[in-house]
Image (cartoon, rainbow, N blue to C red; front, side, top):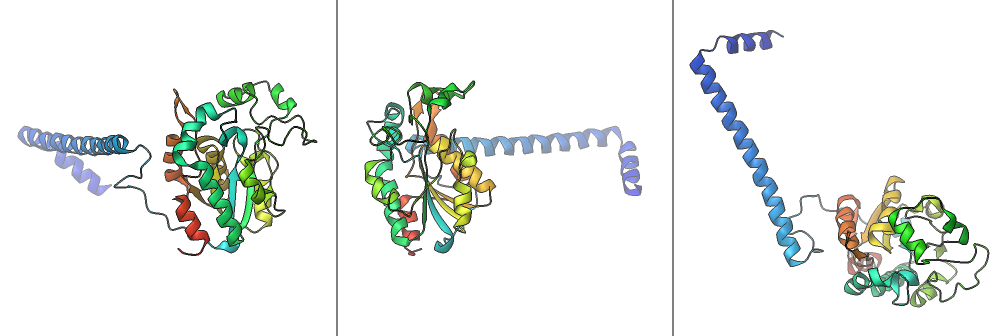
Length: 286
């Protein structure tokens, strides 16, 4: 209180000339600070523009966020694949018109396959979290934009939760090349998730029962189910590495889903790896 009082008195007793000089200094400082902020913002924007001009998906040349320090303990690790299904990953699927370009560019189908092989060789827990819609799901009274689209085109449709009739080779079925790994009697096939995240299925329970707390996450689609699974697993206390080239997303006039997801993966995941990096870690090479 005393120091504040003395300082206030000193200011009150400044001469007019001292007051003017003081204002000039403060104004100059404010202008300088504002200039620094503008310059920093301009630098960030210039960096983003340069990155976009080269490759919108490329890692930043000068990242601002701390690097990952995630190291796998295979005894506590699981590979989780979201929606490895025909409707997302095959030209025969109903969503191919909007996701096909991204899936092809990134080589998603091959990279998910490599992860299955590496995880089985490493002996880690493997789980798939599929997306199914039954006739009653089409009676929902409200839906988000993508839910409306998926229901409209019959994506992931099955006739019932209690029959596999019509499932094989349907859009809801798993990709044929993944079936040897999914149907080996060891892979966990969770109950279906209904919107995007695993909050409504048994994925977290199944992982906890395996004493898993590290997850290598991949699958479809990047900014929807894969990202939503990342969010929930992080909230549940799992350490999550997302494999950025073992996913893909829709490209629409509203935006590039893969680019949106990639930004959020970098911001939130414990690690963002390529398929090769994930495979090397599963093999104990890193």
